[in-house]
Image (tube, helix red, strand yellow):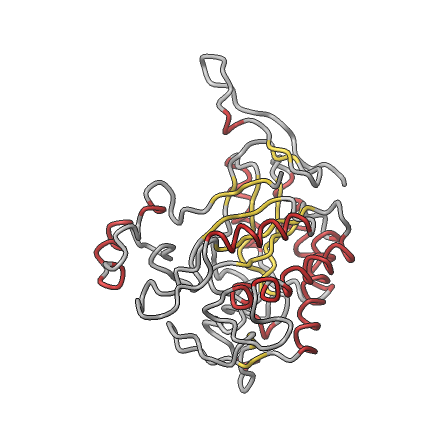
Length: 328
């Protein structure tokens, strides 16, 4: 794989190199010049039709120029039916490759890696858009989202296979654009979470029931990406480690536990993941993973979180408590 990053760790006055400014290497062969990641922050700054804009290019370059080692993009839809919100750049067709190549080139000019986050909303589709009028959001379940009331339609096996292929082609396009890798958005209530979560997935076929079945969709997507983009193309998975599905409604099922997620991470590593990105919560925004201008104090003082005194603990040092962990 062609190397894009330049390893230039900063050296403090006393001559010692702070570990955060030392390089980080992944099993994929990707090396990040330091351990500062710009996470997948959102921003509705692209065109409604899913084409990218110079605002997106300049936005990403600004972080690269500032010295971060790697950027994880905002969620990038693989198809319009899985769009969370309008005004995000897509990677659904080959015509989008040129735009992402331009983004990558501007970021790489500053010695920064760029990882594209591939996403599908599932039923957590905040603004469907006119293209989806009459198209109910696809999900492993037909039950509506209990937090937002968003409707859902249980996917057929054919629809599952089509979306698996959509992720594979998105990864292929990311590699053709010269980007450094992809991340699967398997957290925070979107489609992968809906399959993984015991509090959401109520299927009776091979994609539901025991944990190994609920993880099947994620593992099939990973296998398809390996087929289309190659084993040496950096692949990481962002996943919620604990569902906390009852954070707002205490009488609801809690969903996946930490032990279950550890097992999924083991399967993910065996399937070829080069890193994992850790988050929490099986819906978004979540009291443990707030969005926007929330502070830890805002979350603590919110009545819906008083049932969990530790609700703001992960937010004490970072906005959402996320962290990146390279696979062994």
